[in-house]
Image 1: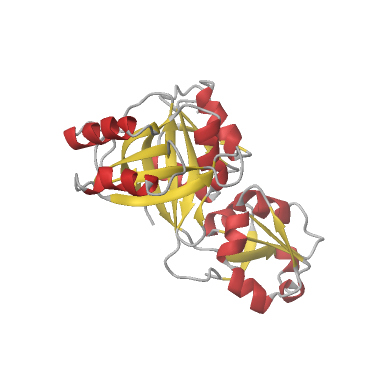
Image 2: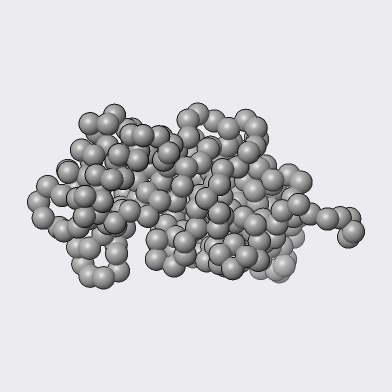
Length: 290
């Protein structure tokens, strides 16, 4: 395998067996997958041509957007979304096998902040008073537990991370709601579209938009640009511009191709209103095999 010539190199939020790894492996089963410790490191890897693509989480059905991903794409880099992956998320409580008989007395629980939040009710009622520790990823938390057999601690993560690091799952499916999915962006420096079979639904385009003023009715004008053209918005969300209280940019997902005449007309009208629009491109959605 050391002599294999890889066609593409893909950065992902690691380590191996993280949810992002599973999403990346599902979409790119035959490419070289390279783990990075943080979301900014993944994004910078593709921005600086160290890899061809990067896969990062952008939104969870329970916890909403991943602010670090959204803000970094707006403020720090000029990249395009060339695909998105939807993955079903199942969270489990796992301990080192040396502590399997002591797990009800665990002294600390480690996981990614979103994973901890997704299991809030379970943790509150089952382990109230136990310290929760935020970690860079669920798989990194699992590795920490594996590396410390003498400590009575637990991680929250997926089955693959338990198998990868030899942990014992002591409680299954501890997330608060059944419909728990995470959306991942596939990022590239090139405005292209992944040519992979089995895409789901229609194409989607993501805009990052700033309003010309904060006068009354400005946002209504912007929404009307899409409404009268019957362009369906699947998401709109505001994020701080980091220039002062009350200053925001908007991330908007439109179920349409940016090359369609109506979309081109919408961009022209937004420009005439004084809006600044940063397009992340048009892409298709893929599902991670369960």
